[in-house]
Image 1 (cartoon, one colour):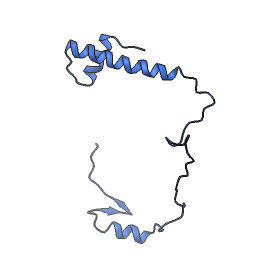
Image 2 (cartoon, helix red, strand yellow):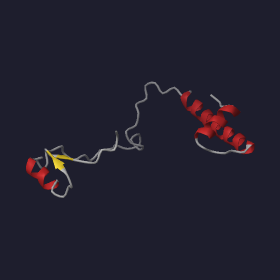
Image 3 (cartoon, rainbow, N blue to C red):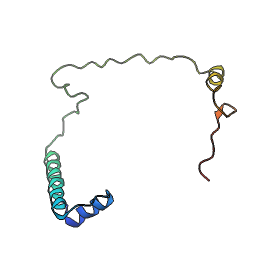
Image 4 (spheres, rainbow, N blue to C red):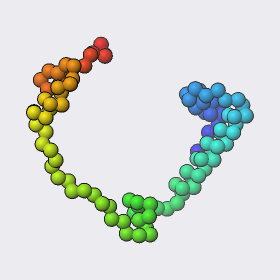
Length: 102
């Protein structure tokens, strides 16, 4: 994939950039260079290769230190009421805010 001058002009317009012809040409070369790199990466056959979960997973054993999934403090009506004490307006356990969309 490569971009031509009108496509670069459209991208610059969408990004609200005012590019001179020299800058536009330089930008086109840089973006097309990026697409060339992506094409090279896509050309590599990666079938049968598992993705890495961590950048160094292929050189050493990685053990993720995950905490136990345990129930913490229960969510009670009392806790909710306590947390809503400083709110300017509350109704049936919900914060009331001014209407912003009509």
